Amino acid sequence: MRSEKQVYDTILNFANMDERIRMVTLEGSRTNINIPPDDFQDYDITFFVTDMQSFIKDDNWLDVFGERLILQKPEDMELFQAVEKGFSYLMLFTDDVKIDLTLLPLDFIDEYFTWDRLVKLLLDKDNRVKHPPVPTDIDYHLKKPTARMFDDCCNEFWNTTTYVVKGLCRKEILFAIDHLNDIVRKELLRMISWSVGFEQGFGFSLGKNYKFLKQYVSEDLWKRLISTYNMDSYPHMWEALEQCMVLFREVSGMVARQLDYPYPSYDEKVSGYVSRQKKRYGINGDDK
Image (cartoon, rainbow, N blue to C red):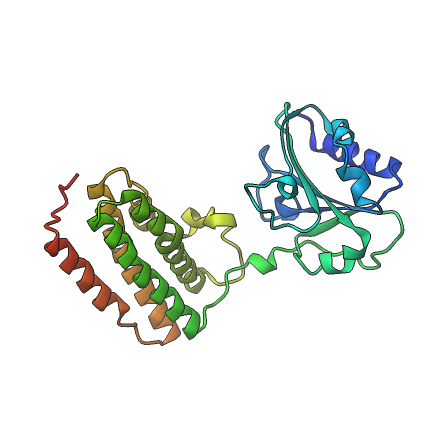
């Protein structure tokens, strides 16, 4: 694998030699001093250019960055709709280096610096940026919820729990898994993150997808949370759902007390609904 210096030298040497490229920035985890560096970190690079189309019409210029294992161009795909502005090249190379390179037109510069504060200026040929930003992950810090945010989280968790139950009772396990993973679990993790904030303070980030959560919760809570990812059968799905319900009840109760906010009635009402459906459909935990 190339060293960090070799990768930056390759990127900046190319940018310096190409008159179409006027500015280069680095984003993402490599700008964040709070993220431990490792070999899997992407190089998230943006080129601000004078002529987008001259790059887009031919991919041969990308060869300067190395031998590619795979390339994806999100803005040039039909099945997946790109959400980024500009034009992107997601490149994994045969030496395992990963560069995600985005092209943006020059007139996006001012707007660009409002998108994210984890940005480092690597090259500015025309001295357009008078005060280069200092990268900070403050936008990703835990934020204390308002009473309305707390209620919205509870409402979404308990409301979607009924969809998981519907899928399980109908024997539509993929439907149930999808709602548990994509919505119910998301709100559980959100609530746990708020509880961490109340215990540890809100001045830090738990990382993308809560990847640092384990460092801030008890071993018991972590084990119980991880157990909810076993969803390979109907009995395990019921166990996962009910453990999510128990965890959410415990953690949201603590957050409600911290907010001095009454605990909403969604829990009691939906928990009763779950029990009724299990009884109605004769589900005892052994159903396959």
